[in-house]
Amino acid sequence: MRKKFLVFAMILMAAILSGCGSSDEKSSGDKQQIKVGAITQLNTKPENARTLINGAEMNFFDNFNSMQMALSSGNINAIQTYGSVAKYMAAQNPDLKITESQTVSLVDNFCCAMRKDNVALKNLFDSAITAMKSDGTLDALVDKYVTNFDENPIPVDIPKIDGAETIKVGVTGDLPMLDYVTADGKPAGFNTAVLSEISKRISKNIEFVHIESAARAAALESGQVDVVFWVIVPNEDSDRPKDFDVPEGVAVTDPYYQDVVVNVNLSSFDIDF
Image 1 (tube, rainbow, N blue to C red):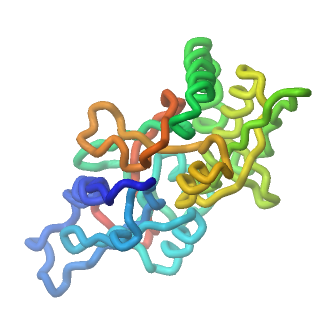
Image 2: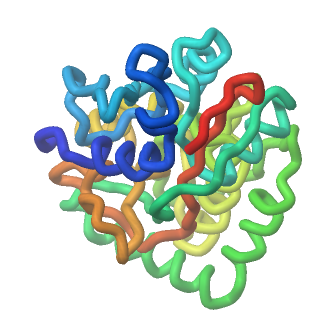
Image 3: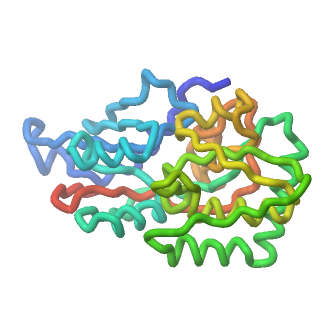
C-alpha cells in the first residue's frame, strides 16, 4: 500500500535550515545540533524517521501529544507544523514562540481521502466542497474556527438523518484547532464543522472514528473508516513530491483548506530559522 520513502523530509528540512547559523558563526565543536519534530508522513518508512540534514535532525511522531512532550522535555528543539496549529499552541503555552520566516515559503493543501475505488463518495465530497467555496460557507468556517478560534471549543453538532447511509470518518486530534478532539473524546474545531456541513449537503450520516495520524492509511485500507480527514498535498507551485502524504490506492478530494508551514519552539531556546 505504501510507497517507498520520498525525499520530502530532506527538501523540507533543507528549506527550513538554510537560514540557521553557519559554521562561520560557531566552531564545529560549538555548533548546536537542532532537532525538529513533525507528524509522521504516510509515505515515510519507519527506518527513515530520523534524518540528519546539515547537523540537524528531523524526528517524526505518530501523534501530537508525544511531539509536544518531546519539545517540553528538550528531546526536540522545535516543532514543524501549520500556522493555525502554531497559533493554538502559543495560545495554550506562553513559553512558546512561532517562527514564520523561511527561505522558501511552504504551503500545503488539506484534502479528504478515500479509497480510489470509492468514486461515488469522492464525487459527492468534491461537489459539496465546490459548493461551499462558491457560496462562502468555507470562508465563514475558516473565519469562525481558525482566524477567530475559541481556545476551548465545544463539540460541533453533526446532523442525524433518518434512514441515510452512514460514512465512517477517521479523525486524529493531531492538528488542533483543525483536527481537534476534546478531553472527553468528542471531535470539535474546524474539520468537524466542515464535515457537519458536508453531511447536510450529501444527505449522509457521519460517524467519527478516532485514529492516530500514522494509522490513517491503514484505517482506510482495512475498511475501518471510509474517509480520512485529513491528508496533505503541497501547493501547485511547490517542488516537493505531491504524494508525500498520499499512499497508493488513495484518492483525494479537492482542497478545503490551505495553510503555511511554520516552526514552534520554546522562547528560552533561540533558533534562527
